[in-house]
Amino acid sequence: MSSNDAASLLDRAALALQTLCGDKHAVSNVLLRIDNTAEAAAAPYQFDAALGRLHRRGCRAIPEMAPVYGLWHLTRDNLKHACKRCRPLPEEPHSEDTKDRADLLFGLVSLMDQFGHVLKERGRDFQNTEEGRQLSSQLGAIYDGLGRREQEVLDTVLSALDAVIEKLRKLDRSLNGNGSDGGG
Amino acid sequence: MRSGSPVLSQLWQPPTGLAPRIEELARAYREEVGGILTPLVEAWHPLLPASPSEYAKMLELSTKMTLVGHACAAVAGYEFDARRRRVAILFGCCCFLADSFLDDFGPEAARSYLQRFSRLLSSGWFDIRTERERLFYLALSRLFAERDVLDPLLRQSILRLHAAQTQDVALRLNPESLATLAPGQQYALLKRAARDRSGHAIILLTTFLVPSMPLTLLPLIFAAGALIMFIDDHGDCFADRKDGRITYMNRVRYPERVLQRIVLAHFARLATGLPTNEGRDLLLGFLLRYYLTRIQKHRAQRRGGGTAWDVFE
Image 1 (tube, rainbow over the protein chains, first blue to last red):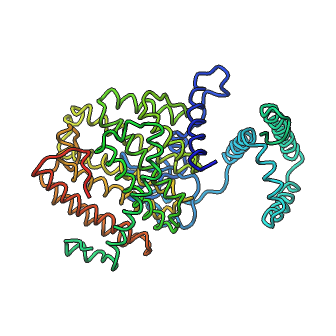
Image 2 (cartoon, rainbow over the protein chains, first blue to last red):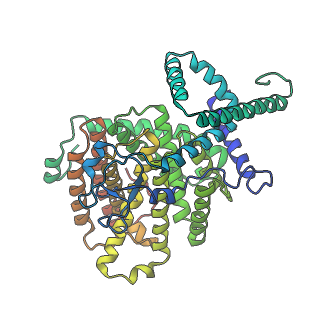
Image 3 (cartoon, chains in turn yellow, brown):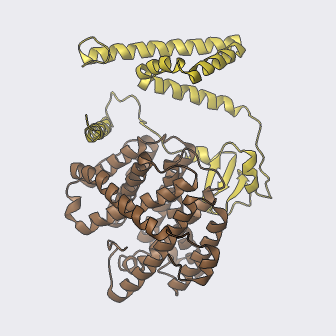
């Protein structure tokens, strides 16, 4: 298959995806939400792209109608742009990070749902690389450091993901029609 | 390459061979743009090349975006490889088509596009009504497939650009809202609108091209984008007036003098702020070339008239 054929196939898939809009069987009303306006406005830091000035959210020195970008984390290097009035400083991790982690986990679940069969095989290959082996020992240490309840939650999530992946693989095989991995 | 201004020469001296290098890049990118966009257009909107001047303008805008993309990626320290060139070319195609929805098919079409694009950003669903919209959606899909589009800065720059476009259309369709302001406020609003529209666009282009943009670069890249818009609006001054589009550059009394002041201020900021690398020279070289050619375009259109679709190099 040439790269043009592949691109054309992806174009058709992208168009077919839009025909699902309004379909009763569509998984969700939201296919992909790019709009993060609300989150950006609530970010703890706001960076004025015109003046190159970094503010805390709500700083009165932010000019009206300034083209600001929300930031969630700062580095020491960013402080050279700091507004003298509100003096933003990097914050210690706080409770909202828990929500971030939950968002991350749900994002992971949705990705696994979509690409699980590919991910599992790539994961096996990755474990055999030097980088993978190093990461594996680090992940083991992190897992050991978790409390019992956190370990249980993680185990449950991973089991659920495993079940989802298995179901997707079965579905994939049945759709391919010949019972073999990867189909025709 | 000569700046034509002694003050500008004091701010930045183009390195030897920069002008032919930019020429050579523009030629190569023009060819690559054709190679990527022509099959896409032929497959999904075959009628577009039937309007040769419009199609040529699309290819030229994508070439310009590719050059700017090259400069911005290099400023941030990244190689402008084949994938990044493809991203910049698709970005140029999307910008051209989006601008056409806003400018060329009347107020209802502009409002409808803005509304449907808002929905695309909030839900991912896009109601495709014409071949041209189908081409736009597919170019956008290919572009989105090249990058993690959930990057927070990238998402914000898409939204900021969309907001700036919405404001631009509102100013054009409801000029009376401008008339209620004092002259100074009118100028400030129009200047800010021009700055934001292209400033956010170049931030978006750069964010598509590089994995992360240092905060120090963000205002400089934003300023480079803003300067492109002022230069562009000066070149299109007469065509815009004819089309009823009010811009800062077609409102001021002495546009060439005003533009020169803007160019000097921006060059001073960019020449001292950007890291000294190939990207800096490419970006400044491109801006200088763009400035000089658009001054000529302005003068040519003052003499002989013209349209927004005129390709001028």
